[in-house]
Image (cartoon, rainbow, N blue to C red; front, side, top):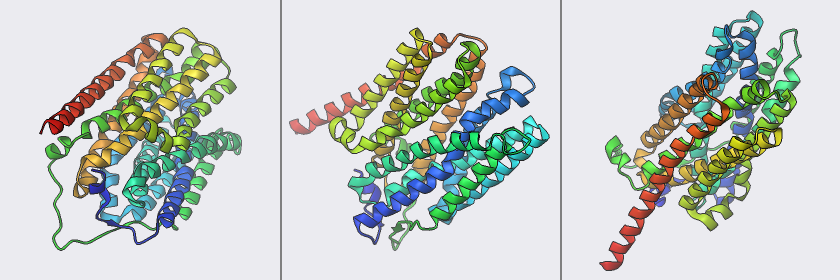
Amino acid sequence: MIDSYLTRINVHNTANSGFANVWILTLSNALAASIMALMILVGSLVGSDLAPAAEWATLPLALTICGTAAGIVPATRIMQRLGRKRGLWAFMGLGIIACTMASLALELRSFSLFCLAAILLGTTNSALQQVRFAAMESVSPKSAANAASLVMLGGILAAFVGPELAVLGAHMTAVDYQGSFWLGALSIVCGAILLSAYKPAQIEATSKPIAAGSLGTILRGHGFILAVASGAVAFVVMSFVMTGTPISMHHTYGHSLVDTKWVIQSHIAAMFLPSLIAPLLFKWLGTRGLMLAGLACYGATIGIGYFDISVNGFWLQLVLLGVGWNFLFVAGTALLPTSYKESDRFKAQAFNDSTVFSLQALASLSAGWALNLISWQQMLLLCLVPISLMLLALVWDLTREARAKRTVRVL
């Protein structure tokens, strides 16, 4: 069914030129998205310094995710109207403004202004999340999953560039971390310049436009709910655990800031490294098998984190958390385009990303609250709820698919 997603897309290029497009999108997105990795490291540190109370320290990072959730529908509609390329440029411009605002907030020591900048950075990220769909549109249908994985692979670059920019700019001026956001803005500018080489896929014009189907019709598409659930659980569990890790490691268990930084960097890298072998993983496991592997990694994360609070314990659980996120998110992304018609793509993508990032925002906001009410081990046990729900959804889908195959054989 993935053919129905891309059969109307006329790339007018060879397969090699299509993947040249994907590489441009990958590198451009990695440079622009490095600001998110920067924010993961710096957001809570700045929050603990500027916030009126300790429990508000994680608010800037949580608001960044809220901004991502809130920006999905506007980002999708703007890209539908302006096209992928100009839409991405517009949101990259917003990201530059947000970095400028954050640096000003640090100078003025304004927690509220820094929170507003965090929301705008999240809104920028909502557009960057659409890059994976642009990459899938640039290649043949059979290569769509690999194209999405390649874009995610660029996250490895962002995982190291962002924190390094944070450290490099931390004392660039008399105001701590002000230079970090200056460098973050420069990274977005470099990504925007590189994007100029991207050539969007051309959609063949039809004599009569096809109206998008109703949301109910999209939801009934085979595999759509499972794809959305896979992405949602990937982000909910990852955000809940990741948001609580820096404070738990550094403040609760007394591990050094250097060790905490190393664990977070390793986690972000682990989120994207599996994309190096994505074609093999899809060949060996298939989409639903990859989802099951992701859930297994999440289960191991909870088990290790519950019993081992050493630096190595945190490192291993956060690496497995990143790998599990990759398996679930890549599998959901690959399954999603097979579940709707090409004319429904913007509407379906907007619903998917709005659902995923809204739940992620809720999980991130809940993490700060949970840290003040329950223990780290109890927080990990709470993650069993979404994991169990996803496992039930996967079993239900596999059972339905097996029943459908038996019916076909009988007929």
